[in-house]
Structures are given as C-alpha cells and as structure tokens.
Image (cartoon, rainbow, N blue to C red; front, side, top):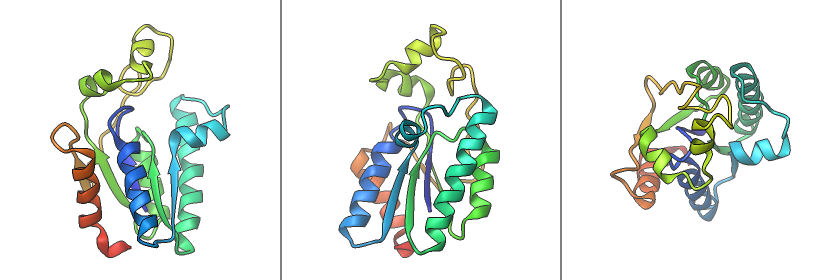
Length: 166
C-alpha cells in the first residue's frame, strides 16, 4: 500500500498516477484510489473532521482488503489527520506513507482549481491548510519535496525506494 498524503495542490495525485501507470506497465496487479475520484462517487461525503475520518476509515478498509488479496494499492488522499493515517496503517500488512511536503504557499500558487482562494474568501469551509489543520506525518517512509524535484524525479524516488514491494 503506497499512501500519498499532502496538501491539495502538493503534487501527490500527479505523482501517484504516474507511479500507478508505471506499476501497471511492469505487470503489477495494482489499483489506484484517488480522493477526488472517490468523492465524485460518494458526493455527500462531508469535510468536517468527523466526516473526513469516517471517509478515510472506509477507504482504508477497502484498500486493506485489496492489499490482503495481493493487489498493490496506490492511494492519494489529503488525509490531513495522523490518527486516520495511523488507523489505515494498522489495517495493512505493508503500509508505506509517502509525504508530499509541498508548503502551503506553493500549493496556493499552483492552485488551478482556485480552491485556496475560495477558502480564503470563506466560500469553502473546513479547507485543509486554511481553516482546518494538516498534521504532517511524524515518520513517513518517504518525503518528497516537489519544489526541488520534478514529477519524474519524484516517481523515480518512489520506484527506487520501494521496488522490493513490486
């Protein structure tokens, strides 16, 4: 289970998608789960702390079942709370936390969806990094800094570091 976490706009989904594509190309049995895509299937999922934690517990359970049946899972979620990520870690045999540590100001600069601007105007409530906290991982297996590494370099770091898993 490769679990990418970081602020909105950090680059986690872009990197995770590319890792997933490369694993598929190599013939790995792999599934990609993305937070935005999952919310489009379950649109009533809210953004309060309780709703986010419930959503992540469900997602983590589903991902752990895939992993238990030999399917590599690449997941990309803001997953802002350590408690939620720790819960998912306990469900999995091989949980790898990958922290995409892009600072808030850089995420805001990259914000093509204008979500940060809307959150700052009060149009979006409970937005991670603005009026809801992001708790960085205490001990991630890998930290990626997308300010100094390209997408290709970040993907290569993941594949080199965790190549024994697949």
